[in-house]
Image 1 (cartoon, rainbow over the protein chains, first blue to last red):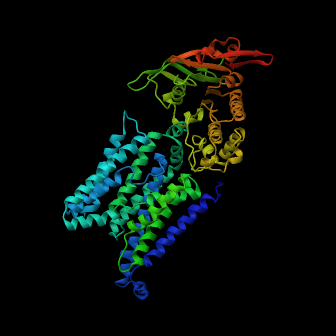
Image 2 (cartoon, helix red, strand yellow):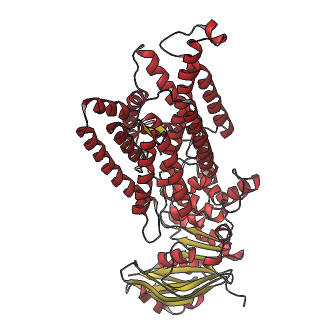
Image 3 (cartoon, chains in turn red, green):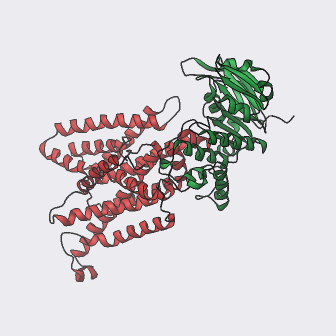
Length: 329
Length: 256
């Protein structure tokens, strides 16, 4: 197959334009039609609906989708595993476990912050150290040991989530199920601001190292003999991917498939160069998730379909398609 | 005689909690030499190349390049001095062949995208390895031999003074095997020190300047090709079913 050589700049520019377009348009999608007169005069309730609810939700969707897609692309390159997702290395399942515990024990606030948010971050941090410790042998760290440790700890956390879920009362149990589907809800402005800053900074750091991820996607020894610091790259990549995934899971629950589908679709179209793939994955992943969420608000209005359910509806069939085509690595 | 570019001194390597693979291996290679590293399966050929490339730390001994111990080199500087072609590399990537070759410029290019000069060097390497024509195809669509040439071109694009090639002729058709060894020979004639692992005794006799045969955890033979053509005893290290055949146009190895 001859790669269509659309210049990298056009892809990144086009994706950025879509991202901005989505940020401008999607807040206007929703179950109630906004009264323009009220919005323009900044009067309640329509002004609040637009800014506090829909805009904040759209921004969360854009950055959460971006973070998940970028973390997926990163882990796929770094671990040389076509099916790697932001959840492969266990940290997000750790975050889920923390959040589920917070729901089960009714921790509404911990030290002044939201209980679910704090629980998720604590769970993620704990699992981060466990996986890192389990994967390091004789001071050495390799993609395969990270992958194995991550998958093992994933299944342990998954089992503990089931256990907690089974032991709690009806109302908590319902809240847990709802949370585990993953959805976008409006979050408070300071939280959203922190989230956007952390995700943006982490993403820039990841994309800046794109040449190293390219080298690692061939093999570790290839990267090492081209002069890349493999151990450092693996540690940084694991940390950065974990920050992206854990921060996101803490706010939205484990939204599935964005991290798998977006990098895969793009890899087939624009090739595997992470310098182009990663920025595009971030921008278009954001558009996809925010778009799915807008769809979920509009289709069955006034009822809502969680964004996590919609991405899974799209992601499942896509995965089958990927497998049937023999992969789009 | 100039100082050797590569010095391997008393190098040993042990499988963790296992047997010794190499013991007290010593070797000097100067610029301009093209050394065939030979030996039976499991003789430690790849291990030796990995140790020289810094991919494994020897359990004893030292590797010195241009008078400086391997560990003292800065990563990028080392990659500019030395290129390594691993035995098996991934083939299922949706990366263009040209992008793979440009990876060889990683230690040289400081910017995020390679310069025109980098592209020129990469293209030149691709022409020499006869893979320029499919530079826009993705690696996954190439045959094993075509892929091997792309990876070899990436090593040439690194413009290193020391080339370590682990079975560069695997998967190549006979014509491309000859092409591959000619190109490496050319690099040696331009002043590089080249080490290539190979099982093809006739390729080694035709293109290499020196044969190093590994056996019994060490260097069993280290002979100049001219001497190897006189005395066939080095062939015993491989098989009893080989012999030198002499004809008017030179000598070659015959199987029986």
